[in-house]
Length: 304
Ligand code: MEV
Image (cartoon, rainbow, N blue to C red):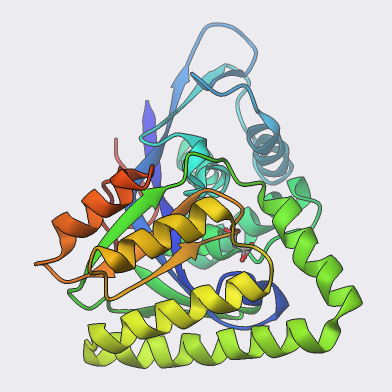
């Protein structure tokens, strides 16, 4: 039996602008997707994904790896998750990364994290018809906290200061592809506006990187607030996200923003140890679900 796992992710800075070549900062989280491959007597590949019938990413991964390696037919692949797809934690990318690694282990091929990233990115972009920056694939492969840019041309591991984060789920599942298309349509109509906002988001990312390096959580919080305003201007926030971000700020957060595609999914708040409980309560009182998550976790690995 082979068992691998890869982490989900949360985008800290750079949402949407990363699609246009600007950097982003992403953290791998402590919620993982696990892949188990076992031999069976039946001469067919069986895929079990309890609670999820969308096999598109698994099928594409299998066909990609079968072109490279001699994948045996008599296997059962079971995929389980420590989080539901609804949060926007990057389950599809984590599945692809964990499965490529498991199949490589099965055929005894040693594959470097970079090779794994390049292959998994191709698979994910194929299924998503080219939409996406691939930052979630990088988080699943490399783990930790990463500055990511230009489809993997930059993947810099950075340290995460010891600030506290609170994650709030809006209760609404975001459609990433639709949100990316929405920004792209706005860009076709108002290129100067979108390019200006993306440039400002990119500048925020560089400032955030420096604040993280020196552990300046107060300034990091201010950057989160300005980031959220830029994302509102791009039209990707929602009433639910704005409500939770406002509640977090009123509860004492140093800063708060939506995380990822927008339109739903999660927001994140940066908090001091003293304000963590009041921010969590404020998010819950505003109708959000607090999701307990820690950042800077290990990338893909073999577990068994
Ligand atoms: C979605 O989680 C983040 C976006 O920047 C898209 C992407 O980078 O693939 C909106």
